Image 1 (cartoon, helix red, strand yellow):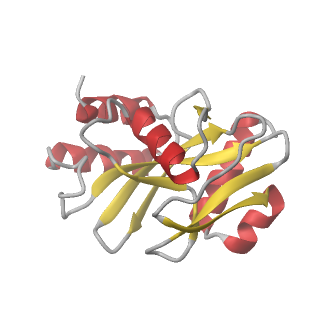
Image 2 (cartoon, helix red, strand yellow; image 1 turned 135 degrees about the vertical axis):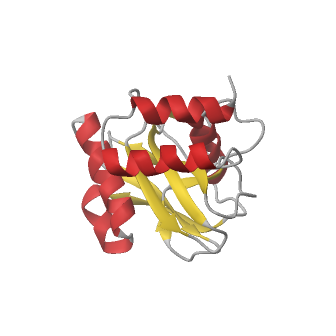
Length: 173
């Protein structure tokens, strides 16, 4: 199955945010290249919020280009076999933490936002950090930092705050 086909199946199976989900599906129907950065009208991206439920915290990256505290994520690549795989790859690369596992149950949220390259139609997952995880800053980050749940809204925008809240709800923490 192609990454495009996987994205369509994931989105069709995602039951929340029906209007935004339909925007994503319409975009893919109109743009066969809608998975890739080269699609100037916008493209699907994959991200994951790294969470450490045992310590009640999330890991955010201070994005080098955007200068904002964000979850790990970015563009899909030709080697990605699924949106889940793309989100996990991005989270692992940007956090430097091996052994991350995605929370079961598909995407946690969708978020559409404009970036310098185009509209990002982000499919957002959550990743659990293994016990004793130690982060390592990547070339895409100015900083990585763990934030207690109640401090996320103080440093990040509403998109990240909503993702953190939805992740906590899914995990029951």
